[in-house]
Image (cartoon, rainbow, N blue to C red; front, top):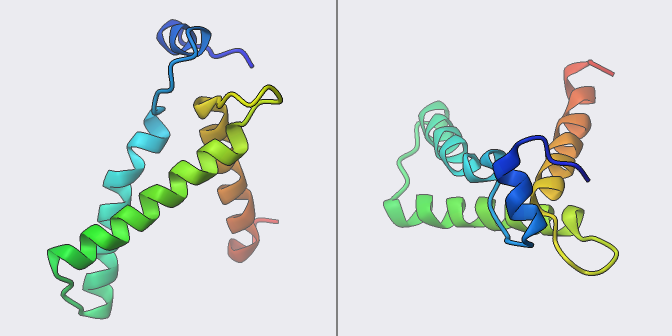
Length: 100
């Protein structure tokens, strides 16, 4: 799979596992979502509860990137995995919004 950015291509070519922006930024987005959930439900979670929820979310994201990015030779193409996992998440959500 061709990666457009030269820096990312260098990591892939050297078989260095790196976290693409969409996967790495997911933590900040997840924290915002958890905050919105607390506000909407009028809840107040402890920092330990938030950390636990965030860890579960990030572990799930990592697992999906690895699962979808596994190459036939067993190596992991994390960027490809993040792209595929992100696409699937959006595609699975579209029917709920009447887009499909």
